Image 1 (tube, chains in turn cyan, purple):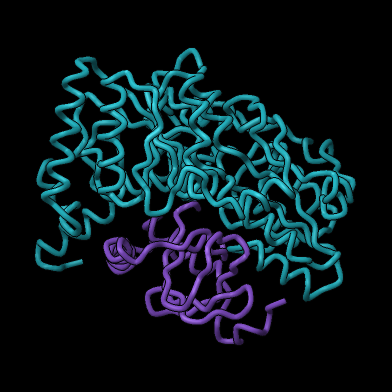
Image 2 (cartoon, each protein chain N blue to C red):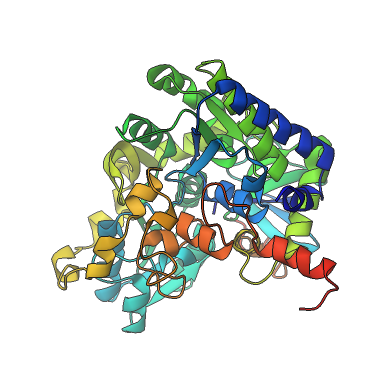
Length: 393
Length: 102
């Protein structure tokens, strides 16, 4: 187990990785409770943890739980339904690829695409604007993602797009959901790892009031294996010392103020409102909607969205067994779900967490994670093992 | 989706930069980045926009991680695919950086 971890971490600085892992072990031991639980809120963090087999370097008494960090997964069914309703009305819809197979209440965008609706997959809002510019018919960009992605939508809207370009915003704002998760009665979370690139935009200062209000420390983390290990060491030290502080372990991208130019554009276009995050809760100020000044670009104000028509056909019994919400709240793991890896697979996802490349279930499935303590043998480890065994495929 | 990808700025045309991502040149929007960006600088690209200028002091290890990730990754490697998607999110540099500049 140990050698697998060492092998995975060798490409950067094995001595530093080993030292960090030892310090993590020692600090968790000093806390003297088991398990110590911390949460990260970023699909890219879970990818890196799973891909590089970091859990095998974590002490067995430390649970590193993924919270609501997958923007696709927390997009609520009625939001997907709005995009479906527009597409079924014959309006062209563009969205990020991961959104295509996310289940709405009774169907997914892929289902309505198969029925003949025009759905364009784009990698960026700019590509959606270009589709609109190349035609005179309306184009609705179904905009999903956290603040890191919402700033791009804002910049594109401020960049004078053509008048046939509309936005259906399902953007979400991370800081408020951390409040909700830490208040949940079942929550075991003693500290948060904040996502480095979201904090690149917001700055780490956005968490200063949070740590006082909720009495849990926050550490901003980058995405390289050593970044994550170093940030975890710092976070666990803060837990040990009962320190309610924010620490920034990703200073090469994150400052206290953040990217002020991007924030200005974000809040010029969007306002925070309360709304549901799929499976989790109503999150006050957790949704980003267009301000009134932007109603001419707001799909919700320019088209009639008939949700009742979309809601014909009850959700399947299987989807009612999905425990995505509990997984995203950090109170359950994918392996606690009886559908995981059986009825629910990447090719046939029952819940949103199995759809997105940032969903906990999808990550655990693809990288073969079995539990919080498993030594992970993901594709990278398997490739290394193959190479070392003589290169046969 | 929030991983982003670093690249080196080659040219600047108004609000767009031609950026080299591991040998592939793409166009990246500059409206969101809060510092002046010049050729030779490194930026972090997310969904087609530079969201941060990255100091050169620290970039080497980061670039190496991304290079290794892309080189050794299988087709179903989620993290590598997200990085590839981030490069896809930028515009092609072949049609010329000024073609879509407004």
